[in-house]
Length: 306
Image 1: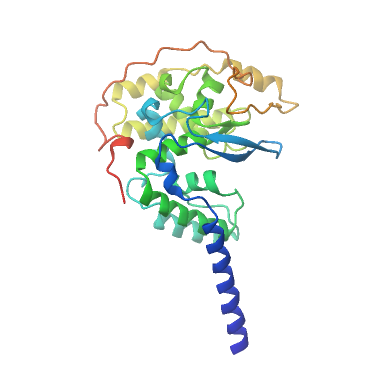
Image 2 (image 1 turned 30 degrees about the horizontal axis):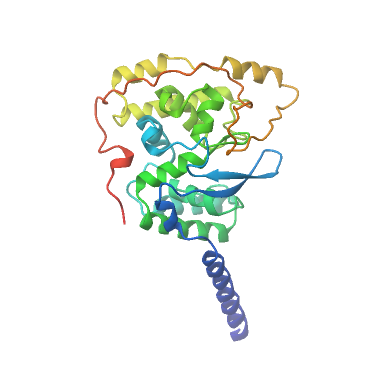
């Protein structure tokens, strides 16, 4: 029995050492605090091939926080991580619920990842669902919360999220689906992009489950209204406004039998985005109106949590 305990202890110590060495080899998160910082990560397309993606101002689709509508920021916070401004990188309550769920289902399907954890995963880690990756993710999320403001974390998150076939970041997503810059997105369009985040490849892929995406976007608009981001009039206007998705719907109808094939587009090339299924004229950014019931503070003005 003593030998068994000794072997288990040695194996656990070796595992912790492995995790520690792996974390030591990851670039420090402090560099992310510099808004001029750019780096290159590897992302996987829908055929399983890896491609380089520039993260930072050197990416032509990069959208600084100042050009992202408050409705876009609040949409992802309220829908993806309601406790974002309260936790220190990870949500203990959500993790406990996820562990209980996974034990009952005997799987690793529910991750309870916060926005900070998702950002850490997208920037530094793979997408494999393992305990080791989750430990790294939690550690990196905690370090990011110590080094970065909440506003900077939201900016990084929105610029690396996947929104379609080789469509990464809301800058690319806004052009890909609506043919306009992020600053010109309407509340309805912000909710539409946020609705895709849980699963743009399958569950919330608008090419396959458009009605499901629209239904979730309605839910997000309700959250924006309930939390005072939208006034009553703005909420009703958003519900009544339609999405210019005619081009995308035609694409869906044409590919019922054969799934669409998209050519990867480098994030650093200056050419036009030929992969966009929509050809919508650019619109002038709408004038912003103060919400009827202002939230505590917009995402970028929340106090830093060190």
